[in-house]
Each structure stands twice: as structure tokens, then as C-alpha cells.
Image (tube, rainbow over all chains, first blue to last red; front, side):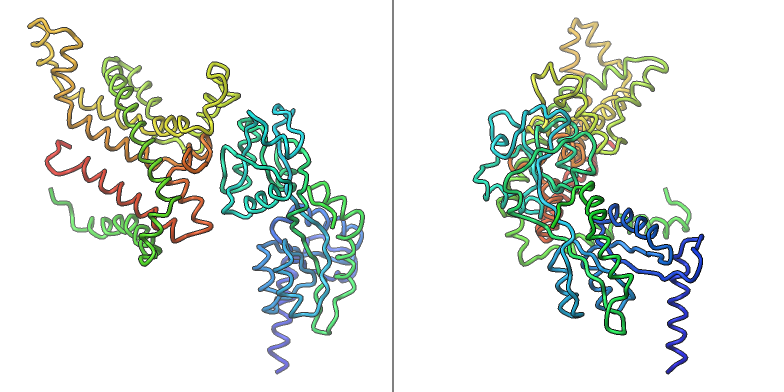
Amino acid sequence: MRAPRFAAVGAAALALAACAPTALPEGRPETLTVLAASSLAEVMTTIVSDFEADHPDVNVAVSFAGSSTLASQVLEGAPADVLATADEATMATVSDELEIEPQIFATNTLTIAVPAGNPGGITGVDSLSDAGVVLVTCAPQVPCGAATALVAEASGATLSPVSEESNVTDVLGKVASGEADAGIVYATDLARADGVEEVALEHADAVVNRYPIAALPHASGSPSQHAREFVAAVLSSEGRAVLAAAGFGAP
Amino acid sequence: MIGPRWLVPLAVAGALVVLLPLAGLVSRVGWSEFGTSVTAPASLEALALSLRTATIATLLVIVLGIPLGFALRAMRGPWRALVRAIVLVPLVLPPVVGGLALLYAFGRRGLLGDALGGSLAFTTAAVVLAQTFVALPFMVVSVESALAQRSGRHEAVAGTLGASRTRILFRVTLPALGPALATGAVLAFARALGEFGATLTFAGSLAGVTRTAPLEIYLARETDPAQAAALSLVLVALAVAVVAIAYRPGSRR
């Protein structure tokens, strides 16, 4: 029994060593494995490098994938210390199983994207239905379009887009090129785009995507100290600033 | 003509490259709901728009492509090769690039934006324009190569009999080009029907206005894969029928 377990630990150590940076700090650094949703790639990379600067004794290995992929990896026993998903439902599948308490660390809401300079003079959701305003949204069949419909309903506005695109990228393309006066997209997508500006969308909080994070218990039964510290770093004001710069809202 | 025997396995591999994806498509069609998928309002609306726009685009291709083929044939020396290469660009251009190019020409901030008093984007006209852009080369090439095979003797005879150039064009040359024109038109129609990238980039996607069958498939692929597969199969069947007509046995190709 002992020999196979030892071999497994050895293989895991080798795998972790392969991921470690070449310049190791003094001592034996602990490796912290963070699993994060793909949409968090940019912000997590920044938060991780800040965290490593503050914790020279810790190496953080981040793995990005779709939330449901990450959740099934955790449930199948992949060694991980922290899990951050892009929605609460996926996190719930893990937290029900592992007795953890996820915390919401970021939110994402819809907003109005306008071309640089706001040539259409868009001031908010009501001006989207003004005569002559060229509006582009996601199609109601896809998630961003379904969310758009709910926000429009909450605000009592009747939107008549000239085009209903299959994804946010195509909406942003129409706005950035100036063909459309306005488009409804996610705040984080807008933050990444060039040539567009934001106009606040009233009642955007009718549909809020919440991003939960949780420190995962080890075999011993509770999360490691460093895992807890990492979660705290994400929730800290510094972490929040990184998230805000990428368009994420506060929980 | 019979080639060496070792061509056979390569030919089989080549056939599989085409047949396997088609088989994959057929395997995903839910046959029990095929009828309802194809006759769903969204499908019918998209198919009707596709047929309508592709027909108009084909007419434009005929009206514009034939003169362009004549002009190309009339050119001499290196100019002909250069102009031919430029006219054929839409054949080899990535569709998204074609869409961007159309946007930069006919969009709000495009070259002709002010002249057009706005933008063609998001209109059915934009769909027709995108389809014409990608389909035009088929007609130009057909006409040019058919003209190259003519000696011009019949036209010369008609000329000595006192026929005007217009009369010669309509009574002598075009009738003789008939099969080539039919092939060019049919292929242009098929290409227009399949147009996707330029339409998505330039025209947008709105049911009944700009959402042609390929765009409806693109949208349905996320929400209703069975409908996407069913509609895809309809387009494949149309394409096969159209190409079979263009290259039917007995046509001089």
C-alpha cells in the first residue's frame, strides 16, 4: 500500500516542480494551485504575481478553464487549493460536496458600449430607443441576449436593435467600427475593447453574474493557511482594484 | 484516360475528406424533427431571405460580370493578368476580410459613407452587396474564358452584313456564350447562397432583414444544434443540386 502512494506523491511533486519558476526563493517554497475560470485569466495573473511578491515562500500555479471543467476536476480529486468560478451554480456543485463556504469576490453586469466620442449622444437606456439611434445587441437565444432582454424589461424600455449578434465580440465590433451608435455588452468585455466608451446602463443590476471563490480543504480536512491568504488577497482592496480595472463590479 | 493504379488510394482519401464531414452532418440531423426544424418560422424566414438576396445578387452578377469579362478579354499584355488577379481577389479573400473591406467602403465611416448619406450596414442591400462581391468572379472568369475560345469570325461576318455592335452582342456573341453564362450564373448563385463571413461582418444579423440561412445556422448552433444541422443539410442539398446543374453531363465543360 505504501509504495504506490509514495510513487503518486513523487509524481505529483515532479509535476509541480515542472511548473515552478526557474528562480526559486530561498527555502522550500510551497506551491499553491489555483483553478480559475477562463474569463478571469487576466485579473488572476495580476493578482497572483502581486501575491507571490508578498509571499516569497509561495509559488502559485494557476490553471484556467471553463468553470464546469474546473468543478469536475475538483470533484474528481485533482489537487487544488483555491477555486474561482464564473457563476454560483457551478460553485454550488463543489461546495455541496466539500463543505466549503464560497465568497463572492466580483460581479459582472451589462453596460452600454458606444464608439469613442459617443457620436450618437447616448445618455442611458431611454436614449437607446430614440429615433435614428443604431443599436446592436446579442440575440435573445444566447446568454448575453437573454440578459439584455431581462434588463430591458426591468427598465421598461423597448429595444429595437438593427442587429442581434451571436456573441459579445460581434456586438463590440459593430460599435468599435462606428457602424452602431450603441451596443449592450458585459462590462468586462467593454474594458478589454479598444475604441469604445461606456455609458451606464440603468437597471443593469436586474441581471448580475456573481463570481465566487473558495479555499479548498486538503486531505487533513481544512484549507491551508496560504490558500486562505490567497482568497483574502483576492477580496482585499488591492485585489478589488485589479478587478475593477478589468470591468468587474464589487460584490 | 486511365492513370496509374497508385492514384486510387489517394483518390479515395480525397473523397473521404469531402464525404466524412458531410456524413458527420447527416449523423447529427434529428430525422424525427427534421420537418419541424426546417419549417420552423426562423428557418423559413432565413431560407426565404437567402433565396431572395441570392437571386438579386445573381442578377447583379450577370449585369456587371458579363461586361467585366468582355473588358478583361479586350485588354492586352500584362494589364490583363493584373486586372484579372484583382477581380478574382474575392474568391481567395477570407470572408471576414471581405466584410471589413465592404465596411470600410460602404460603412458609415467608409469611403462612400457621406455619399450614401449614411451606411448600408444592417440593411438587406448590404447582404446583396456582400453576396455580389464574393460571387462576381465566377461570372467574370466564365465569360472571359468562353470569349477566349471564340475566333470572332461570326462577329466579323455579322459586322460586314451591317449589324451594329449592340446587335452583334445580343444576336451572335451572347447566344454563343449561353452555356458559359449559365454555368457562371449558377455558381454565382450557389456562392451567394453560402455567403457568411462578409454578411456577418458587414450586414449584421437580424431576422428577416439580414439573417440569411448561414447566419441562422451560426446562431442556432449554440441553442438548437438539431435545427442548425437540419438547415445545414438543406443548404448542402441546394448546393449539390446547383452544382450538378452547372456541370451536368452534356454541358461543354
